[in-house]
Image (tube, rainbow over all chains, first blue to last red; front, side, top):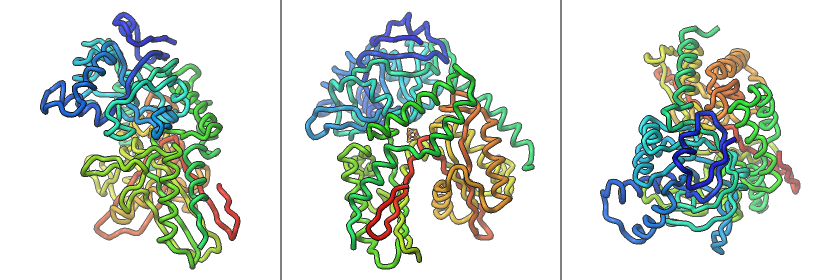
Length: 209
Length: 290
Ligand code: SF4
């Protein structure tokens, strides 16, 4: 088990290999589809001018994401009426939807760890080598368990995106995950995909018994 | 007519927080098959820690509480309009109580309604009048990750070399499982429909999922196909979460329907390991949950 504390230093990132279980502690943010699209269009590509509180949120994110971690998660949150937020269920969502954005976001903000489920593609794998960073696979559906590792909700940005899509700033302790894409170019997802493809071809070549 | 709002609320709470025992058992069996210390075994271990925790704390098994899909079978005399209202009220209450995540997003504006009430299609409610004396409501929570990896193919399909027969169906299903990799939160349960039109076919593929996990299809040909598909899908070795491993699916349920001479659809609904479904039976004043 590798214990990682956010912000994560480069040496710690380079020391991780595909298959390693990790336990994360520190402050991270959640971000999924709307957040990634917003970050890339407004600040990475500057395809549209910042509006409303965009700038303020961006400044806050810059600090949080430098050396930090972004978690693909749309949580169930209690205390919405009192603003005393508490994470009730907080498993990962499918990461591949962020593939068009993730590499750019990692470079722009110096993100060290992307956490989600299902793995990501070549662009993110390249960014993992360059930044350097890792992709950490959390266990899909283990939402109540993961919510217990969330000690506190420190802030929320862009709640107007909706509860699942908002960027929640959370302090976690012993958040469990597995390295499935490392900074040395290895991807467990690519391996499993290739092996299962061979198995599929073998099965498809045989007819029904 | 009796007000069932509070009973529907309890049905939703159970579905979201209390995974059916048969699914949990099946996951335990799967865990015993994985190599100790492997990523696959670790994933199942975490899953099996999460299940009782959610049950005990009455918190969602998974944060994606999905599309609530209700199938209500009722005897003569009930008003579907009132039942629909009660289900919608219960859904909003369950969201306020954090049993459900607000999941209804307007496709044009992108706005989340905040209470899981969308248009007529959200939540999804199917009604059917029956000759039974009791009212039965089945609820399934169908998450987005697994719904996204479902597939529908019109046979024949040259790319897969799949013809219009059960051999062709087999190829479609195995290809769908391969394409899904771990993204539907494997190990999954597959609902497969053969025939129908595009709409009825997908509908039936979800209905098929309501069968008990360990039952046998009454049609011997389909029973054999289900067994073969389970075995072969596992030979793909995608494994829990797509980490590689012995168990890729927990089961396959196939339903056959009549079709047009010109059409031969195969529809696959992929249900993640977090197969949250519950039923309630209303018999006079008694309400039981299964
Ligand atoms: S696929 Fe199922 S277990 Fe996985 S995140 Fe979606 S609802 Fe949860």
